[in-house]
Length: 230
Image 1: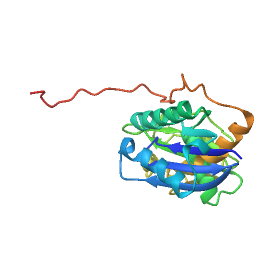
Image 2 (image 1 turned 90 degrees about the vertical axis):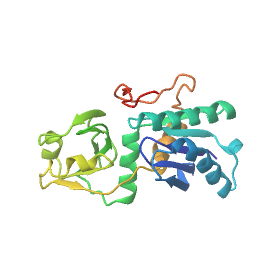
Image 3 (image 1 turned 90 degrees about the horizontal axis):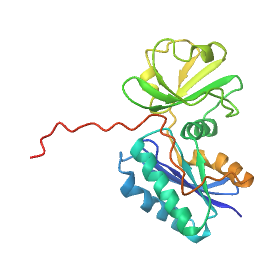
Image 4 (image 1 turned 45 degrees about the vertical axis):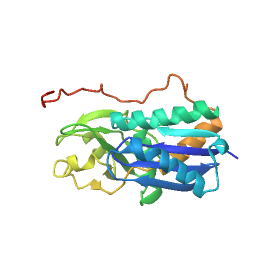
């Protein structure tokens, strides 16, 4: 029986899941803000303990691989790598936007002909986004988009319903006003990793633990502090 721990830290929500043979056993999360470094390890310990498991029982660790928050992704991937190295188990990477779309399909009524557009907040009017159909097949590449009235026009035109969600969705309200466009409330969760993680585990599609890095999409920009040093 394959027991997989899932780690989702790409946004302001820190979440972990435990699944067996592709079946979700439990999910825990914290939305207390960007405090993942302090909260992630206790969440992992809690989800294992409350389900009568220990780290040695794990067969793999799945982690949200980006795009998303630079710091959040680093924390999640570093923790996942540490577990995989220490336990001698494989690492599985799952795209953050796919994971978010998977949560939407699991918890919302998504009819055939609907296109899904999960969005993760980037900077200013920019979002990370990818378009999926109702079967979670990608219809676009992952991209960084500056939102204006023409954004995603080609996908909206050929869909029956174009559904936008995620913490970047607010940037589209009042901008994308086509009647086909709908906004739903879907939050990131490690439960969204389960399906893809199980499929990759069965296929043996593992990451190179030593060299795996999150998919940031854009370079990390360091902003100089305006406060005096002395």
